[in-house]
Figure 1 (tube, rainbow, N blue to C red):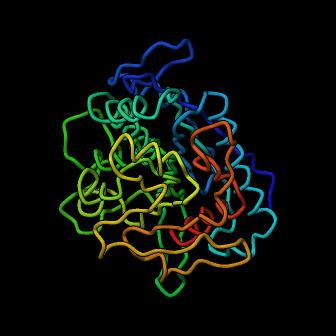
Figure 2: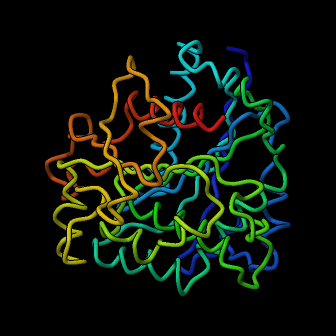
Figure 3: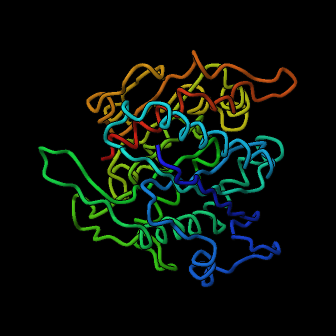
Length: 327
């Protein structure tokens, strides 16, 4: 692997979902494009752009540390065995971490995350971010079908817990045709969008199992996404197993996976690094990844169980595999 540096940029949101500048002042929606232009500069050699949004009970420091660890694991795994991911060669990432105020009781933060996405500006701001990245990057171009090769910069959305709600709402909002500041811009009359978010992975999502048939149903029909929505779950995730049930009267996706629409869902186990994922097993609109055998650690004095136990080589392997299969 070459010496291309792994770059990570952090963006902060306030409780209303507005971006914050270096002085902690809110950036108004009309000023977001100029702000992003100042903050984000994608190096020419970049092949993959990762946008990561963290989840519940995460401080600013731990949000950046956990994201950095996961992103470093991805780079390290690729550096150790690039031959495992032939389609990626090379893999050079540019990473953006979206932080938001997530400390507090589960129901309180559930309500805050919902308001930030629906009443506030979080979804629109993240959609603007995705749109800006789509404008600034070199769009991938696929070569002849037999070669299965492509070039350009690929865009990956990675969310944890409530961060997955932000990303799903943002991607859906980008296709809603609303009059807003510039976001993702495609011709929605086409069955296949000219360009899309290239992979979506939500780790331990804090949403009801039927959310893709209700709140996020347009992700499957009218959104700029042409890849599987991949969702991990673990029986040891008490945050979405116990606290989500108390707050929303059902276990969350992070505990049981998505359940409807059933004909769009397939279940796959989280594979060891030595085992490959295949295109056939992942070519469904929604893929539940059973990570119970790996995501099982939690500090006994914290109520969330294994909700945040996702920083493993197996997760990096899944992310690299999704990036490779996007080619």
